[in-house]
Length: 315
Image (cartoon, rainbow, N blue to C red; front, side, top):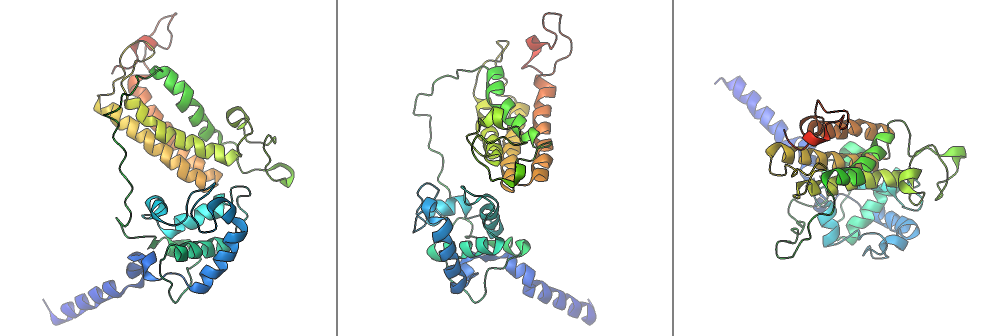
């Protein structure tokens, strides 16, 4: 290998090792990513807007804790951009969207200080791309607790057949998400703030009954799909009396697709962006379609059974 080529390779490796971007990618909140002054500003904002729900010491009251092991289990592996955007888009719950981006970043600095992450020489940056390069805590710092085993407890058999489960949970929850394609949950008439039972252009009334704000209803729909989808793996009967094909590999794969679609819908809803949820609704539609094509949408049928329900739940 020539001397010039070796020199070029050495310079390239040096550039890689010293690249600010690559070094930033390895940063965690333990590396001093905020300043004490920034945390002090965040503390004042927290007392004004957050303490009533999350506690003066961030211990959690009406809302979850924002420091400690439980907080790290929920947020430890996520970049700080996710936490900032959560605050920016959905907090405070009584008046979401009223916290500015600089305020949200200062609030995160306060949370880091209370969580005993060391301060540094520079403020947390405002740019989303920069915040994506900082993870709250190293991998494995506070691993989530494993789900408690249920094998030792008697689990009652399911009450619903597969059709009833679909219509009770997945059909209404999916329709809430699909409804976002044509209606913006954040739209307010006459610039009035949201009030329970207010009439607006988002058709959440039939699903939320006016109890929760429109965007919250979309949140809950995505979570309902993600957390209820494993019920599809519980042995139960189809509407026609056949056993649901829970042991089939493709059935398990379709179930995982539905879980991921529900998670994606919730994450998109948290952005409070109609277009983001509309895009994810395609993922949800595909997850439903893949299973329906194999197990539900059967050709043939009779005058008494035009959709051929008798043939469902088999390949």
